[in-house]
Amino acid sequence: MSEPGVEEVDLLVVGGGKAGKSLAMDRAGAGWRVAMVERDKIGGTCINVACIPTKALVGSARTLLSARGAAMMGVEVDGEASVSLEGLRRHEASVVGGMVAAHEQMFARSGMDFILGTARFVAERTVAITGRVGASRVVRGEHVLVNTGTTPAVPALAGIDEADVWDSEAILRLDRLPETLLILGGGYVGCEFASMFAVFGSRVTLLQSGGQVLSREDPDVAAQVAEILTAQGVDVRLGARARAVRRDAGGGEVVVSLEDGSQVRGEELLVATGRAPVTSGLGLDLAGVAVTERGFVVVDDHLRTKAERVWAAGDVAGSPQFTHASWNDFRILKANLTGGEAVTTGRLVPYTVFVTPELARIGLSETEAEAQGRRVKVARIPVAAIPRAKTLHETVGAWKAVVDAETDLILGAALLGHGAGEVISAVQLAMLGGLTYQQVRDAPLTHPTMGEGLNILFDALDAGEPQRPNTEPAPVRARGRPPQ
Ligand SMILES: Cc1cc2nc3c(=O)[nH]c(=O)nc-3n(C[C@H](O)[C@H](O)[C@H](O)COP(=O)(O)OP(=O)(O)OC[C@H]3O[C@@H](n4cnc5c(N)ncnc54)[C@H](O)[C@@H]3O)c2cc1C
Image (cartoon, rainbow, N blue to C red; front, side, top):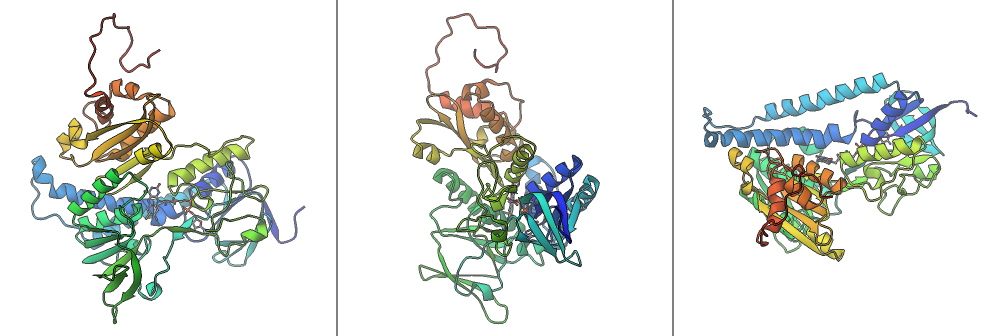
């Protein structure tokens, strides 16, 4: 029964992130009555202030590096290559603006009710929407999806609130390229900005409290990334635990005081110490939706919250903090809202850290595999062993794969080098298809491509093993076909 003043829909999406907008368009296209409420970012975090603008700028950094290395490829470029702030801004704005405009059209075409405003739960499956909608609206969904994402977290450091520091969104406004940039946090966001700004010409100091950058990676992989950053001019300081932050009087330099008593100074400070869920003030308690101590929505493996017919997805639901994980949540939700039983358990979510060259990762690291007590074989090659890398003078980096010593199945890989983010998809498909490392090793992959490096990588596992002469007639089958 509908109440006066309450609009009823089949699906109410709160927060238009990757999962939310995908589900809203899909269900609206299927004829459901759908309302999606978005506070301020048409298309969500990824296209406005995260993946897309940062990768547009990584593209600029790589173009600059290519231009600087052009002579090596026999290409003469007049004058010295450099970036212009205005040009960077234009490039970033055109990429983001184009995607936002495309989303506006897609939303309209899907037939959903796209509401620009801030939603707050006022009862079970019911939100009040204020802000850009003018008069407030109250909407109740037969099903509700919470997809409000995360936002940059500010660490509890003395003085930080008064020091006018940047977070990953403020730095993208690009009102100047600082001569000196301090970055607090050596996770993937900190490393990406460090690499990019160092290439643009800023003197970057990366402060990482732990003993390695990218704390989740194997120490050897993290050390190689740190070496690459150092070669780009980044001053990588490990074990640098910040205690307090202040800015000199009159808008002067930022000073970070470290626990060892030393201080580091710079024109600007980027704080990249993680992200916090957007759940406070959302009224989730009124909707019966539980959150964890850290504020993430509690979901089960079907992405169901504690409240009936209320679902959550993406960063806010504790999914791996990547756009493609949120998109995969959408696939799971679509199945579950239409009678299926899809789950998040055991899914394989790769990721790429867009330093230059990039690090692509999937599955178990060597450290994780060993912690699980597995017997593993580890394949390693330098990127310089891949013919394609030589043709491009892109020989920096190393590849590594972890293989189960009993089953020969690929458990994980860390590919650091040119094009790694593309090649990791091939490893992912091999893992999803249950291929042994020998099947990948023996597949005739296109020459010369970076993907061909997988033949070389898995060949390296057997290097040194005695080659037995083949005494039996060779079976007639295409190379690369799975053994029967
Ligand atoms: C600098 C940076 C770079 C990144 N690069 C990559 C990358 O290269 N690849 C990758 O896969 N991931 C990357 N990520 C992570 C990726 O951006 C996130 O994992 C992804 O955007 C999460 O999507 P989501 O679906 O959880 O929701 P989001 O896209 O975060 O959307 C949530 C939406 O909810 C809205 N909202 C919040 N509260 C309300 C409310 N009360 N009412 C209405 N609307 C509300 C917000 O405005 C927002 O638009 C990056 C992140 C950062 C910070």
